[in-house]
Length: 117
Image 1 (cartoon, rainbow, N blue to C red):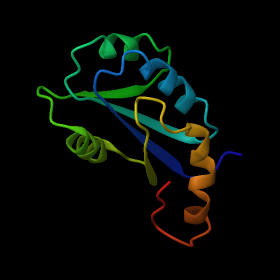
Image 2: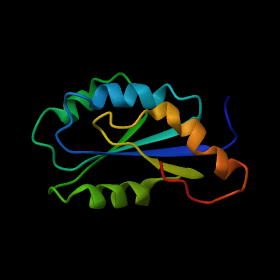
Image 3: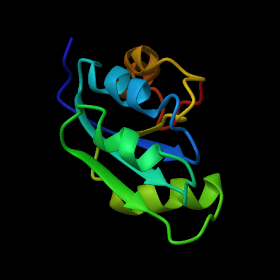
Image 4: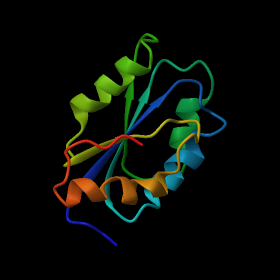
């Protein structure tokens, strides 16, 4: 069910080594034109290595020199995003990326410009 829009997925990450590879694989599996932007907020664990080893191609990674918090990570991702719609996907598997398809439907129908879910 591919749509004509591009979805930018911003993944703020801080010490997410146990889950980040699976998050990226799940995001990449969504049937949409995707741009994946991971913002590593100065992780002190193996998050960077797990991103590299995830097997997901074309992941844009931004690395903060200092730990600035989730809000700053999201803002850094927003500066780089080029998609028509932007989604925030936490790096800890709290949300299912397959929900993106349902979440963007009101936007595609022109009913709203923002969806929170």
